Length: 73
Image 1 (cartoon, helix red, strand yellow):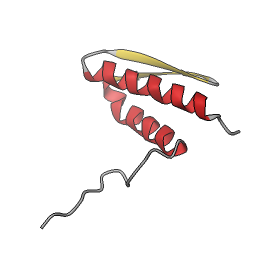
Image 2: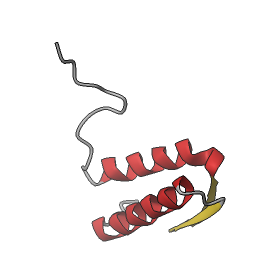
Image 3: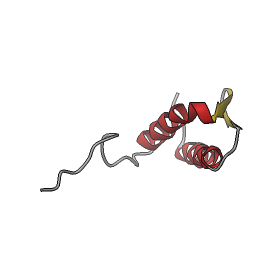
């Protein structure tokens, strides 16, 4: 099922906000989506980052592979 751009953008904004809350010391955040909700803790920040990257890919916002680095000589 395709999700419209406005919904994806709203989900991405919510996910980024949740990551920020965890990064500044929050203990638990909840993210709501179409079929339910997911709770993230500081321990699950990598999983939340993967979710954010997934949303960015669906919106065409990624510019390079995760973890890639430019080589400078």
